[in-house]
Length: 281
Ligand code: AMP
Ligand code: FE
Ligand code: FE
Ligand code: ZN
Image: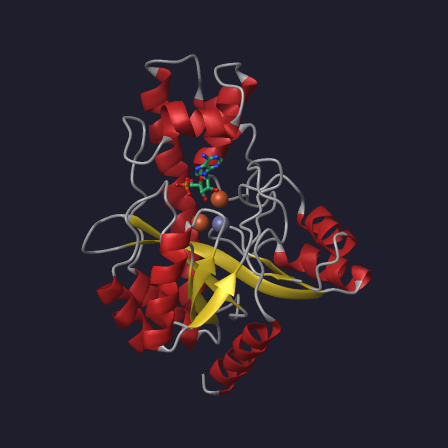
C-alpha cells in the first residue's frame, strides 16, 4: 500500500511525524509520503521512524500557490526535492511569514463576532509549525464556539467566506519549475476537490505538464466519479502519471490512511524521475 499525501503536527495534522509513520506501518502501508503544508521540518523525525519500522518514506511537502488567472489557491505536492535548495528555502520562509500574518488578520475578523483571540490560536501552534485555518478551527473548538473542524469550516472558515483571506503565493508554474530545478517531482494536489476553488483549468494543466509536472492526484477522497474520469482523460492526453492518496490529517478530518493509494509502477516512475532531476541539476 502506497499513500503519497499525509499531514502531521508540523502543519495541520494531529499525529506527530513519528506517530504517523508508526500508524502507517501498523496498518500495512509500505510507502508513505509526508507532505506537510509549506514545510520540511518533519522529515528528520519521519525518516528515523521509517527506518525503525522498516517502511519507505518519501519526503515531500504540499505547497500553496496562487493561480494568476483566477487568484485562487492551488495546492501542489512536491516530492524528493533538495530541502536546502535556496529557492525553496526562501519560498518556505515567505510562506511561513505570510501564513502567520494572514492567520492573525483572519482571527481579527472573527474576534469582531466571536470570543476568539490571537493568543487562543497562536498558543496551539508552536514556532516552526505551519499555521493554517485548521489551527483557527482548533482555537474555535477550544473556546467552545464549534464542536469540530468540519463545523468550523462549514460555518465560519469556509473558502471565500467573510472570514477568509487569500494566501498570496507564487504561481503553480513557477513552483513546478523550482521543484524540478531542486531535483524534485511535482504532482497537482486534488485538482477537483469539490469544496474548494475551481482548481486548475485543463489549459493550466497543459502548461504545467510542459514545465515538467509529473502527475495528477486523481484518486483523492474529495474527488467524485466525474472528476476522476475528467482528470484521467487529461492525464492520459498530457502523459501525466496518476496518483492516489488519502490526504490524511489525523483526527482533523475523517479520512483514514491509505483511503486511496498509488500503484507501484507510478511510485517507481516517480523515484526514477526524481533521480533524473537530481542528476541533471
Ligand atoms: P489554509 O492552508 O490555511 O488555507 O487551510 C486549508 C486547510 O484546511 C486544508 O489544507 C485542509 O487541510 C483544511 N480543511 C479545509 N476544509 C476542511 C474541513 N471541512 N475540515 C477540516 N479541515 C479542512
Ligand atoms: Fe491541510
Ligand atoms: Fe491540499
Ligand atoms: Zn493535503
